[in-house]
Structures are given as C-alpha cells and as structure tokens.
Amino acid sequence: MAKITNLRCRRCEVKGELRRVNRKGWLEREFLTRLGLYPWECVLCRAKSYRFARGDNS
Image (tube, rainbow, N blue to C red):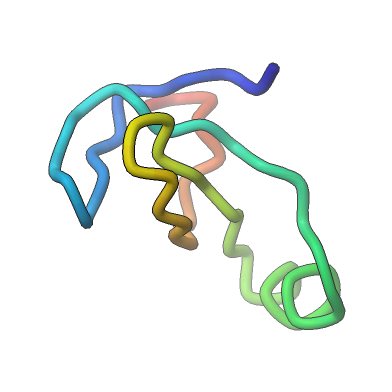
C-alpha cells in the first residue's frame, strides 16, 4: 500500500488521507510525468487529484 500523507483532499477536505497511486494511461505516464505531477487518491472518497508533491516532505 502506498504511503499516506498529510495532504488535504480537495473534494472532501479531510487531511491526512491521500495516498499515491500508480499512473495509468498515456496522459498520466507521459504528459503529466513531464510536468512533474503525481496522481493521488483520497482513501475516504476515492477522488483522484494530481499534485506536484511526491509526499516525501509532506
């Protein structure tokens, strides 16, 4: 299971329940990678978002 960080979900606004998820599809693997964006998913509401933070320093 991916590391859960102290980032806040933009949909349900709960803090500390986001985890990094694997990239899927061309857009996430190629384009967003070049921009430095990482896919995150809220454990509670399952909303997916893209952030610059990797979670290492969060």
